[in-house]
Length: 292
Length: 292
Image 1 (cartoon, chains in turn brown, green):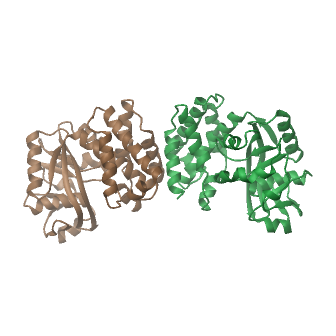
Image 2 (tube, rainbow over the protein chains, first blue to last red):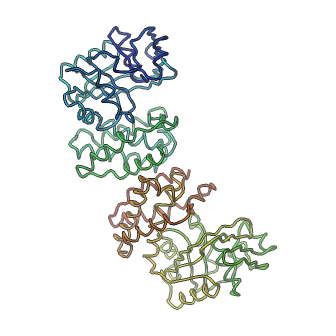
Image 3 (tube, rainbow over the protein chains, first blue to last red):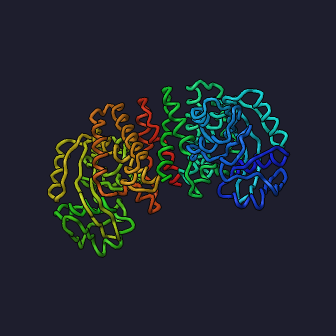
């Protein structure tokens, strides 16, 4: 249980839904002290939560929310295997391209939904999540019966979470338009979003990289990701407070970076259809060097 | 007078040729104490040298050797203007592409030669040059009568300097095959040549960048710069001791980097004939960010 699972799981439990938390490092703490969420939308405290140290001990569930760092996705089949039943829906609140396809390959009949969270939250201490701002979630249907997805949206909304359905491919690639340039470039130059945009050379480079993502999406048949969207992302980032993307935080705290699903995989997918992303491929190489 | 002018000028003076040194920060020191060269090929000391604080005070000369950092090339016409006569030859011992064309534009009738020095030397103190290893110079004829270039080769050899003539365009672009990847990448990742080659991701990136230079040279009609030459440069660098290129030294010592002639200009020249260098253009942007 981290900042994502703790926040969304906590909100759902707080609303009275039955939630079971898989917790590694925090397990002993949350069994004794529960889960605290300090939130810009109102703090709450859950003195007793259903916590487990291993998914082997958990009941099979209707919905699994995954907030795992994608560097650990090789563990995902083993982690969720024991709690899957016939019609379980898995929501992957993770960054990148290709996550759903890989999980589907491991469980061909699983109902999979992409979760695109727009949230600033962090786990500051064991059993303590700080939710600073935003908090909405968009769901993209990868392989889920529509009525199950509608139920999921209702559950989120019941728990006070803004939730909407979005087209799966478009949503994943639109998120990549922002994620691919800014996550890596803030690490490569050890800087922040505002400084990258203030320098004319890196501003142009960020835009060129966004346009590589637009080109890749288009080459893969996702025509709703456009240069106008890249323009909007530039403007949105100009108007944001200086921001450290998740990869920058991982790098600063010496955690492994999510290079595979954020860079390697989308670059591979595009190359398969003959589209080259040279500047993002170079960024991938710089990140692999810095990840050592 | 820096490490280049001090070494080559010093050797020529030591051999009895008439040499006049333009010296800014060292002027007072060298007038009093002369020039000391500690060299792997034998130390020597010149107690009295012809030193000048401004080229206005210098005699007009047959040959001008320029070892100026190219970030100061906007000053070059003013610096050499007073000492040029009808048939003066200028040797530009500088890194990059386009240096000769820019100087020729300022002095259309000037005889210009490219000097490609293979040398490790540094100025460690005022009036004191340390020449660690190598020391040969290749000359590429840009706009010089052949007999003057032959005389120049003879003068260098008389002074104990290995000197050879090389085809101008080929020599400049071959040097760029090594210079463009390694100068910038050691700065971008704050590392050394051996580490860049030890990591598979950056090793491939370095090779891709070399191939962008090969492609640019070919697009500009310089067909003798080949992928085999890039292979040789990879192998040579594998066999070298870990090395900090001049741009890395400039960066480490907080001096301005030679981005224009090493990156901006060759990338522009290639783009004019329709050839794109995306990974080196990205490197240029990273360097411009770090140069601030």
